[in-house]
Length: 168
Image (cartoon, rainbow, N blue to C red; front, side, top):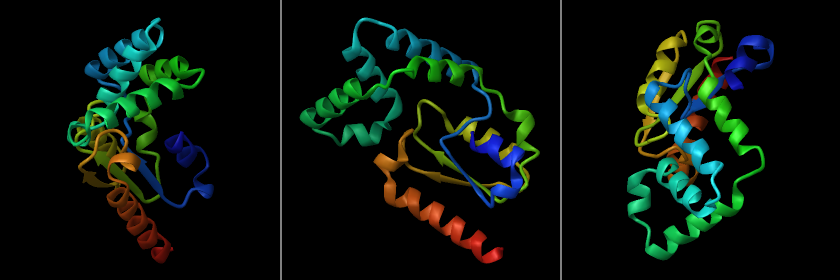
């Protein structure tokens, strides 16, 4: 959505930060999407939640948890899957914004979540390489940097936005 807003309404966008994002799913990501949909549509919300936690969170983050902490995260995931989640995941499998990338004219930062098993650094690099002048940065996080590495994530974003506010 952010890429489309930057392309369609460049007068409203002054800078763009893309985190754990992708331009088009790879074949591996297509298998992940199919598996995710199978779990979401199953009659086993516990198994779906366990799968989602294992895919979304980085292994280093999960490995530091106690059994009770991990169980609480799984339970929170199970109870927080919103209506329409399957529709959103289906969209993930169909997205292809590669043609839009070269049309982005605002300063752009692509933040790669380096231990992301869902949207891998391969996807982040493809995205950054397609955007003229995009900056690329990595943080040691799974798909959820706002949970796993919020300080590092916010520091990257803040510095980038401050730099671009000064440049304007």
